[in-house]
Length: 266
Ligand code: 1HE
Image (cartoon, rainbow, N blue to C red):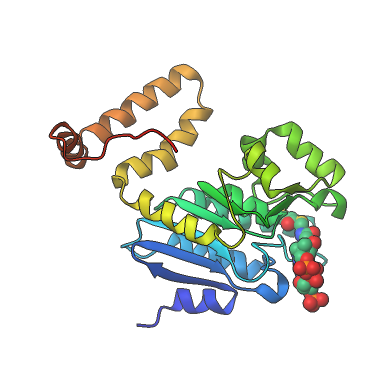
């Protein structure tokens, strides 16, 4: 059956396909290196606000040689200051739909992850990068500033000092250094990011939905709260999660020797 949201998104350079219960969202504007036009940002918002009911996790990837070249610079010239505020706020809504949506999102990164592309990657819950990945914030050298939530999200990954360095000096991090400083949590051989992201997303999809919800919606907020508020929020969240029938079933299965043990890492 045709879906107007998906048709409009496809026309603007974003596709959605289900792989089992994982929603695979692909930036599909390779001729422009998946540069994020206004309509493409709207398409990301619409897709993440309307994920299929059966989706338990999502992956976001880029078609072509690069994950994403950031803001579509060809649209920048037309905007005055007031329009710039609305434009930036529209990115906040779209990337909030990624971060605070229905399911955890794994980014599969390769090639350029720059400017707004890095802001989009930072809105995801897990980043998997292949060896071809490189990260930059060229806003500094283009005479502009991040506007897609990057000044909030990127310092949480790598710290204010490293982000300041990237923007003041145009510093580019390669894939290995990106993983070392925390831009990605997984580093895989070139061409393997999508498969690894899918593997992780399928694993995430087997968690109790309320646990995933707590990790997406409660954890980042608890981490921002003063400790005494955080402990109380944690206690409330823990209590709600524990009280679900699914949690009780899972714990019972372990106690009966029917659930996987934690094994030593490789
Ligand atoms: C673009 C864009 C774009 C490519 N907007 N059209 N982002 C940047 O400053 C990064 C700008 N892009 C690049 O540095 C490079 O294009 C890449 C490293 C990403 C890729 O290089 P390459 O050699 O594979 O491709 P290319 O030949 O540079 O680009 C191919 C085409 O894509 C070309 O158009 P064509 O018509 O000449 O074929 C490029 O003009 C076009 N293209 N990137 C528009 N970004 C919410 S605020 C966020 C603020 C920002 O993100 S600022 C950072 C913007």
